[in-house]
Length: 230
Image 1 (cartoon, rainbow, N blue to C red):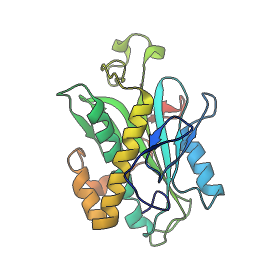
Image 2 (cartoon, helix red, strand yellow; image 1 turned 60 degrees about the vertical axis):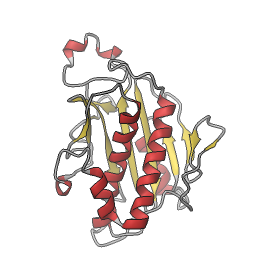
Image 3 (tube, rainbow, N blue to C red; image 1 turned 180 degrees about the vertical axis):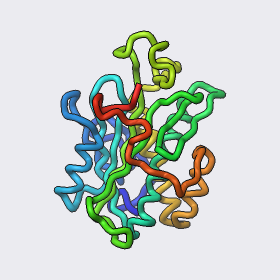
């Protein structure tokens, strides 16, 4: 499983203003450009060299990121990289979170912060790819609720929370940078020790049987608003 042509844990600044490992090429979207997930899928479907592209969403109220990956294993194995992405998301949130509040993941890829829904992750691959075939690409994407001001009184949406509500002092870019670093560490672990190592790493935050994981967004994503359910 590769993010790009090489794996390096060093970070460099790029014109987007993000400090990312060189395996990633950032693409920052405008506020009206749609979701990072959809843009990354379109890039993956239309460009054989898209692996390593890290798309950063620009819509207000959410933190969103998507990355195009180049799998080297059959789909039945390669889809486990969703756990690597989810774990990286949980680690990024946990590393910037106020102390003593748990970060957990469920089988639908929902990320819960202190038992409230904060966001989640999705995984996409080419339509019609057989389980025993190597997909031409994978896209892992993640979203977090940055603010719920549009929803009005928080008491009207008690099952969800936001970075703002929980007192996160970190901006969106810092969370994206942290996610990229944790993701690359997970991919390096996969490359060195195989998918089993990635599964073992995920168990610290995954509150479900990995075999039941389904990262299509149905547990947390609201298509009508193009973001996490409030």
